[in-house]
Length: 74
Image (tube, rainbow, N blue to C red; front, top):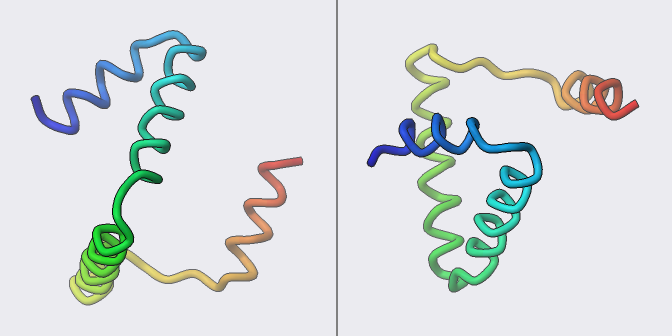
């Protein structure tokens, strides 16, 4: 089963079940060894850098990001 297939199925769950699943997934990440966490962050940084280089992602000012986040939370 692919990540996309899991996502499609997970989104069919009731909100409470999705919240429980999200909590379990996040908790499983907390149990990773520090070396694994560092490796994953390094991979993510390389992936994001490649997206910037090939034009599939763009950068935004932090102020804009935080303002949008505050607006969504209010």
